[in-house]
Length: 493
Image (cartoon, rainbow, N blue to C red; front, side):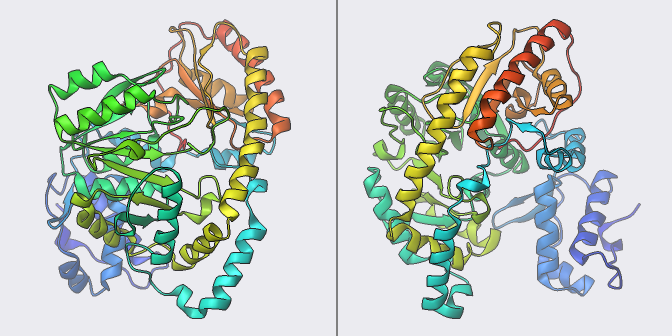
């Protein structure tokens, strides 16, 4: 039986050393040569034994964690995941995650694809010239300093500019409670590393953002789903589960929820805050797209009405600006700030200093507001043609509730149909949708599916929905009572 002490690395190989180490440890875990929950050697010990630098070990351990083979306890070390028995982990699904072609792969193969699955914006929306201008200004002003490590908490002038932005949105905080992060996904990840130990309970909406579910599973959390209604989370369901479970936190998207597009009523926002105080849990508020409101309704954030410092507020700028920038921030309750800062430092030390400095200028010059107005106008046009097309072309057997903003539209097939079947059927006809199974903890097949307007131009949406309507009519005739048992995985965002 091979053991950890038997691992060797081939320094003459073209394969990176950390990849070699990752594969060695992964194989030991898969072949059951390491017991679940065994603590792996310390970074210092293993780097000395293998005669490599610490970064090699760190990168290998991080990759093992990302793939779900290990979990980390802050201050304790890295431990082997029980991949064969954990209720929240499926080795079968892990293999699919590693091997399944994602939507972007399909796009590279077929240029005529209609992609209703992606929520990434079209590149023509990116303010390239404005970003180029502020980048050049930063380089002229700061020179090489722009490429040094920033403090883990984030570039102070940017945190100051963000505090001003938050003031305009009725969120009162200080620079000391603002944490700059490399995208909202990283925020969810470092919060989980700071707050969640093996087996801890976390609550999520159901359905919810698949990226958050992946993070919670990687931490070996016990995920409890709370159902969603048209006006937000089901408070009665939440109260019932709070009688049995004590969650570390609940993850929610109160405005234009992903994937359903629904928004919480103000009454439910207050009820959720009251329950958080009563039962002593935190709320992670992912302010996904509250900026994209297409009516006169005001979308108050939970954080703006949080009087007990129970809400961790996450806001991504890059989702609307340029996804590749990977820039976001969190407002952290004082009681957990040190733990979060430590987890951020362990994750990547700090977010790109150049990008932080550039975005600081971008905010202060008013370019963010200007671009947001432009993007809002474009998305409102797409949103309106989407609604018009849905009403005109989607068969009456398909149920839906139209949102008031955001990018997502949630549909339901008749109960006897499978959205995984629909996904495969549409894909064969060059249309990509997001099946409901992607947004549940167990990825079980169901009748729901999501369409997004984010990555489609205005002139494609009507033709796309017209084609989608025809495909749905054909599907309803051909696939009744044919349940799909194939696992579907795609990184639907």
